[in-house]
Length: 403
Image 1 (cartoon, helix red, strand yellow):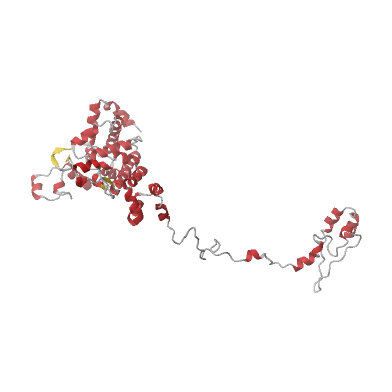
Image 2 (spheres, rainbow, N blue to C red):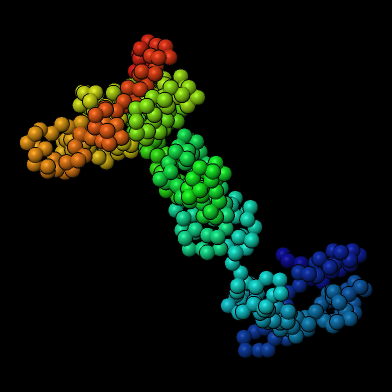
């Protein structure tokens, strides 16, 4: 049986905390349907003296501000502080469409990050190291201010790009050996040594964008060749990439005398390079004489290493060229085919090869000196290994089993 509220209040009259906690359970009675709600009835029995002065509520938090129930009735539910209803300031993040006020420190309407960067020359040349060569060429072509700044340090700009994207190729293929890929100094600066002998040719040469694209192309070709051989299970050591580039540089020399002098240069062609070059040639023979995918003849390797560039070998390994017998015969005609007297008399192309280019790749200067055959790079490697007494044949089995 539930106890009346008066009994609970009378029983805990001595303890004000218990009285307050118990009185907080008071609930206003509900009015019958159709009648107006009446005021809450007063409790029967004695009330603690601390709450005797209050009429409706057994306790009040702020007696000076009136009754708590009346204050709750007077309070509006949508009364929000006026600070939150004020419109946002002009140009704030909450309303970016509104125009920003003019700033004396920085005017965003005319600010250019490129112009601000060009004001610091050293920082500009550090940033352009991370641009791709195509992006650098586009910037050099469209920006007049950057064009003028780059001309003051053109060699620095090109070499920084080459050392960032292809440091090994930049060292093996120096721009001074490829004058056709260089340009005159944009500032017309001269070399003192050339000015004494030939004043008309005194303006120095600097590396151009063509040389930069050349070394990047060769970097990709060498990586592709190594990747294709490794995909066939023919592994190569990591330093082999530098050796292949040295073979490519030797192939660029147009005479046998220059090629022989280069291969005998122990500072450029070390004993390790000769060993790795022999290993690379051995792996090519293993690929081309494979009983499943190869032709079983060493002539294919000799023909590919006798071309003007190793880019042909890279395209063959990637299955981009020499995919059928017609393309192979066309390459053979350009390399070492000797036409008959009837064919010479007709003076017509053979398999698409011009008459003056038939069989010319095997001669010095790629046909400029038809009386002297080229010494190919694979022949030069064998000859130099014998001259230095490296005894390569005892390593052949290790080369075959490597990887």
